[in-house]
Image 1 (cartoon, rainbow, N blue to C red):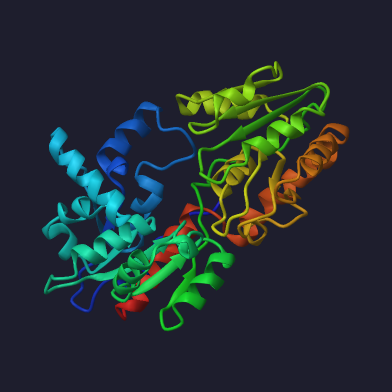
Image 2 (cartoon, one colour):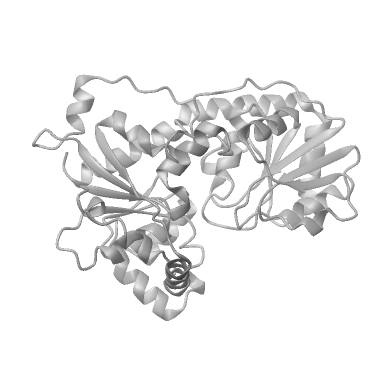
Length: 380
């Protein structure tokens, strides 16, 4: 739903260095987010979710005056894989993957990362390099678990974060924690967004029977809360599409099915049949669930979600029906509201789509923010 910004001569000039060349960006992602493999899956329709041809839409930066190089996954024999994963467990980040990027990493003007696992690895890989590009360190889970880290990990991460030019987070709750932990570091709130150009107008969905769809494999999904809420719902059925939801939760519950979507077409079919999308969450600070909420909003579906992680900065209570964490009774009541008044649910979905337009929530704004931060750092 974000309109693509018109490309004008001044926009290209703004993204170029004083020498006239484009801003050189290296996008360092996890090994399983290899850009070539991502593109093949996207073209085949097996990449589940609303996605671009490039991981998380970072390729849009090329239209904003940048040249991009993506990290590459390298073939591994069993011994090399064992070593890499062992180091990742020990350090908390994938150092060998970053070291394997070689000259492409150091040739950049700026490095973008998607989670702390990548920015900590890049900071470590560049520690002894003569030439160091500017590093934008995007964090998702780090500040949620900071208090539980051991003293050695805290000391190591503090040292590596010294070499990060800018820390970015997706929620204002994480922003407050990060600024407290690192008062001398520049920390910015960069709202996450998915490709939002394709939109389905909200339609009135049947409340009886109520068809509940819950999607996601994030570590902070509260599936137990949703299952407890279902026990008091008559004429309701639920489908959980997740790679992490315990299958045992569906035992003895004929109105609950747990599985996984194997293709984007399969996921789209589930969205089309659902009455409501439910996003049950454990307390967190990193806007867990925001991807699924945006996908549901674009599909024209009403959303019931747990009020945690800064989600209300994206969508207010007039656009998403929020419930407190860990409260099955409140979640059940919210779902019953959807069933009792489908028209009110539809109007909430309309307001959610309007919010995406007004606030510029989407991949275009998300990537544009990265470009703007990079230009500012490099005085371009």
